[in-house]
Image (cartoon, rainbow, N blue to C red):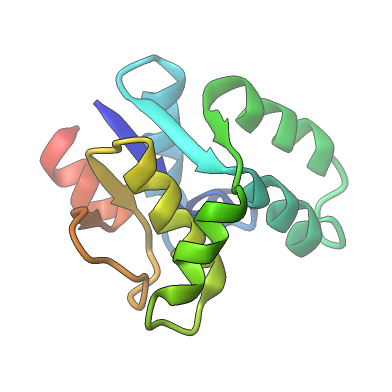
Length: 132
């Protein structure tokens, strides 16, 4: 099954936030090949930007992510579509468009305000409960 993983899942793991254990479980399942995971290229940039002041080996973490997921890029048409969505979070909109364009079955996010129109959203915990 092809899944899309929101940036916050990786930050939960890296920064050991509340959903840390769920992020570990989810990403271990991806690493084992149980799911085909995709992310948007900006996810890697955002992880670097947010965490590099707190984590010394950020490049190693990004490299590890890059080795287990498919990284998608945003193009002009995707940005145009994302700008038309009635939601103030352009990053979420772009991630939604990327997930839709790549035919992901679902999006995993711990963002309660993540935009969604027609792709099922799961928190890391609800995804684990249903699929692991």
